[in-house]
Length: 166
Image (cartoon, rainbow, N blue to C red; front, side, top):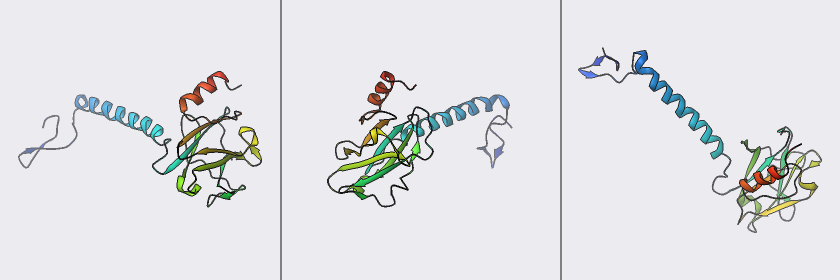
């Protein structure tokens, strides 16, 4: 028997290497691949899939419990399943913060995506009704305590660097 298992039916077996020396490089390669896949998949999930829009939200305290997105289409018709008392919970979490993905078709044919990020009656972005054109912008970034809508992650990071969390 060699490092690659016994002969099976006159042919070399397909089992894992049996010696410690042969297994170490294989284990190291496997661990490296798993780490790389995990890191890549976290970032891939933040990009909205085809037909969806994305809202990314960053809080200085990194506390997102109870925060949700109130979404509606014109004129003030809520997206199905979303009410003020039951906002849409975040779709997921990323290195930036949390994010919501919603079907663009739910907002009607005009393309206007209306939203308020809130926790109870505490609202972000100065408490204003916010919107963006989902036909031209598929994803936005919002910073805690900042009224602006950022259309790129780089712009949001630059703004946070200019106005760091206290």
